[in-house]
Image 1: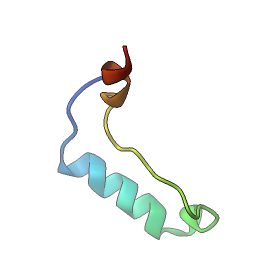
Image 2: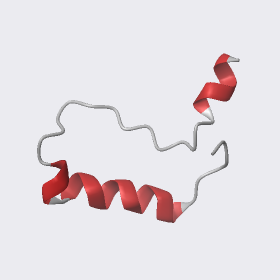
Image 3: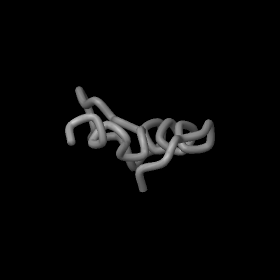
Length: 42
């Protein structure tokens, strides 16, 4: 991946978290960053 994200990427994550599929996810940090955070570490 390693690409910049756009609004559709964020919207997809929000829809997932608000849907029944995300009902058991709690207290998490969901990084929607296109793996760019890993670029900072290397």
